[in-house]
Image (cartoon, rainbow, N blue to C red; front, side, top):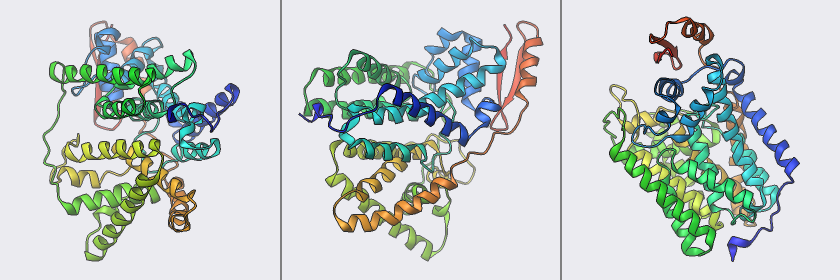
Length: 418
């Protein structure tokens, strides 16, 4: 059975530790202010920390947000309560960095050998670490749910774990992902397919787990706080689909975040159409001939991409439809999985014996290196003097409301002093 093949090998425990530390350092180097000048960003402060502080960690943990349980960021906020308030953003950022490094170790473990040799998996991991077009996923715990979903995907499609310790780890990752955001809805059909393909005890466990978490998320949607979701006209059309697919996904993978999809004129659109056809052709060839792990990644990424287009959760910009907003938003979290899937498709094509695939993929991979360099650093957040507001909260009388500005500029969180 394919589920039991582990011919690709893995790392020794000390090697895993070294690789994990190196990945963490790389992510810190891309946004050093996340450690050396930590501040809250958006929902990190306004929702996760404010809820944990004002409501208590346990009540906040069980509170749905935007129609889903969001357990990972709420756990991070709860843990940050153990430290002085001034260090709370640092604690949450550290958790995000640890989660961001975790896929590297999962890929290099022996149970991920279905992806290929250890050397090839190391290349896949390196591309993940340096992936362009995902600047929004950078040392922040709100967007860590996307990386956690990647961890869960790798654990789900991997060979069944052979030790009790790895089983516990995998179940923890799958369960945490299942109750963090809407990903259970996408994982459930994959888990059922793997169960149909190999009816082992482990496949029964993973299928049952995602059945459970899907039911929990459905309950959260109908019974819990759905938040403020602004109705937005998608403005769906073939033209904007090509612009998003070519500019935001395919060109975003190759040259990094860009606004090429907004270019006007006939020649620009013909270029985008050619990119869409060529990029989709590469993905189609990969899907037709690749191993089941790669096929499932392409399917999962396509489901994420389709859900984004059908129901984009965006803050309306006057004068723009939903698909126009998606076109002008380079590097957003929605592009993480499609970008990763296309980048890995190019790597898969490059290592195939067919010379035509190598000729096509080699220059594109070379171009992608420029995109990696271009997106290698993330701009630091605006200095809003968080430490001064931490002192203000410390000196405030009990029961008073303290408003603290957070990034992005214009956002605030309100804390009721204990």
